[in-house]
Length: 207
Image (cartoon, rainbow, N blue to C red):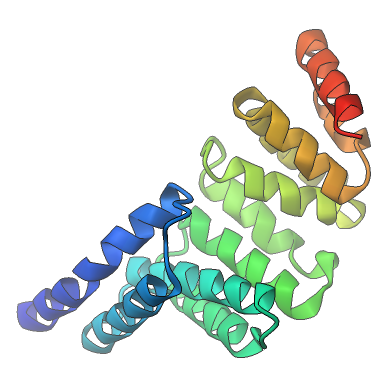
């Protein structure tokens, strides 16, 4: 039983450098590195199906899909692979906040329906509500699906907005601009006069 696990771990090792670059949003990350990481993770999963490894595969594959889309290609097969990998990972380890977030992102890319991702998004927050590094993406998805969120879910996303605004004020403004409505952000920051003032000032400057 230990041998397949060992081989699986060895295959996954080369992908860790690529994952670290994704963590840092490294602009030097190449498509070749992503493809190599994807292959390594597929080999790893062939030896042992592990929830964490499957979510790593979903992450790498979604990044490849995004690049394919920006290049004018067809990202649909990679998006489907992302969804399958994320579901596999979450079935084995359902408390993976990033897995739920990836599932939400890939599902939105597939369906273009913000209402289809609300349950995945809320599960991501519940799994790790104070993860500062996931907060911006959760804020972005939350604002895009705001009209479909129940009041309690809006409160959950408002917490993510505040986390994002605390660490990345400029990024919060950019997210609000893409959403086309600063209202939910202003409402989330209303209790903190200084943060709201700063957001409003940056929002006006970005016009």
